[in-house]
Length: 75
Ligand SMILES: [Zn+2]
Image 1 (cartoon, rainbow, N blue to C red):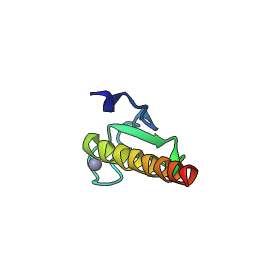
Image 2 (image 1 turned 90 degrees about the vertical axis):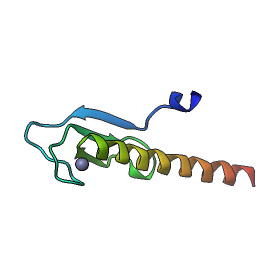
Image 3 (image 1 turned 60 degrees about the horizontal axis):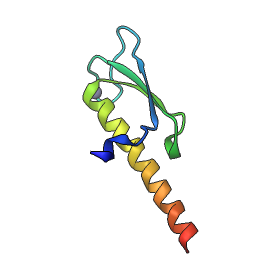
């Protein structure tokens, strides 16, 4: 599973007590901050499943940006 070895471009902190998920309104478990790509410095409070989705959105954005850059270099 070498796919899991790439560095996640998202930093994770504990959510403040009593905060709620930005996407679904459930109690938030973590505060995520994007640290790469077009989402750089975007942060939010998320429950566990929405946090996973946010991470994936950021990762996909970073991968897309990297792919675009690679293509630009190749041409
Ligand atoms: Zn949620």
